[in-house]
Amino acid sequence: LHVLPFCTTAHPNSSAVLDFKTGDPKLGDFYVFTKKDYGFKFMADIELNHVSNRSPWLKNYLDDLDGYENLFMTTWNDFDYDKVYSDGHKPHFDHQQKVHHGKPLLLLSTKGEGVVDLNYGDYHTFIRMLDVILYYTSQKFAALRFLDVDYIWKDPSFAWEGHLKSHYLLKIIRSVMD
Image 1 (tube, rainbow, N blue to C red):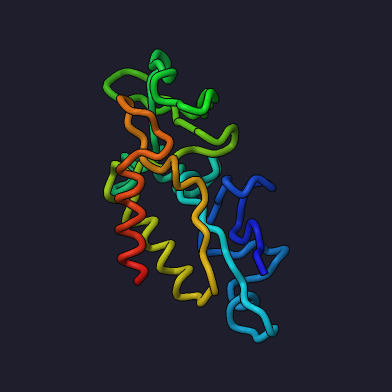
Image 2 (image 1 turned 180 degrees about the vertical axis):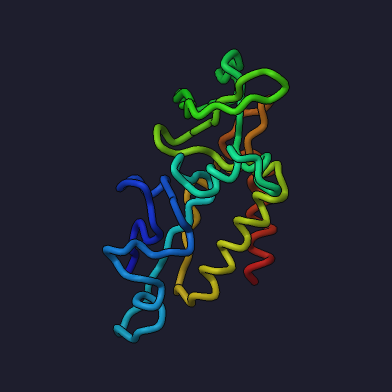
């Protein structure tokens, strides 16, 4: 049985993750899905690319807490995304601004309003998400599906969809899971 979304989200859009390790209260906690014997198995989705703009992780980022400084993709207002966005859609920007070198940065969202993109160019982000994946693995879900993996690596000089570094990240994740 595939339950989507499973973790706590800010709204029905499963990309707006508030807490990866807490089950949606309307559905139950991880125990309900992974420890009881219902005669069938459960599959969970993990959103690798985004969190809610109301996430505690974003608050920690905006507060400049150690290990959160580069957790999210940021940009300046004047960046030209035509060369990197291959599917014809334009990215959205969350207007919670942070100033860097005297210039306001906007938080990038490839999914739309209410979510912000994680920055896998920062090792803290990758380690934090590996921890999430290993947590789900420890909960004995029968299968995990990673959402939006074709956009997890963003480079301002190359098209994002299907970036080779996304492929490498997935290979590392798979090796760790094995």
